[in-house]
Image (cartoon, rainbow, N blue to C red; front, side, top):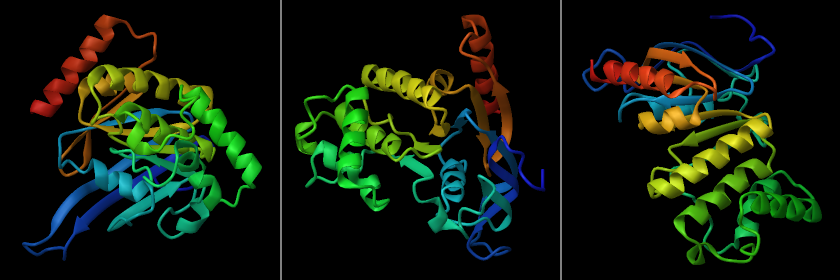
Length: 255
């Protein structure tokens, strides 16, 4: 799994382990264990596992917030931790809660990433407006977060992520705080936008149903984070095929 990533590899983790605390002591904790994982460009990967299985640690290593204890992480061929600044505008994150700035309107929140990239004011306003319209928020541009529903706030968060035109989207259970009907609509819209715009997405979830709805590939992790099951399927997969995958995931998680 080592070597130079192929041109269609967006994310590569080679022999990655992450230990918190001093290795070999009783206080140390191994969160990730010798993980090999490639994510190809344009893939929508659902990273599935129980709480505490290392999903968030993997997320943080891909985003450059922490480095592996051993092994290599490469995003678009570069080290996201060592070359953190070079990833401005290249990776966008959608968090579990919307993390909107309460003193900024919806359109101002969407503009935030573009401001950090020094995008001219007129261009960033037009881009923010376009993405708010795509996500069904036309007419709410000047509303502050407190005036928006939970689903609307998360739509603003998604618009903010897409507005920077980042190639890679990292999503940390972004719909888990929403009611199921709202979450289902947003999952479908989000997946459609990812595919239409040729993005690569890694989507963390602990829900089998959500993984089946959002992903075209599901990787199931067991603690400490290691791959227990890895399956690809297309949107044309029928109910029987999906049920087979669901049953297999259930067996892996209960083992």
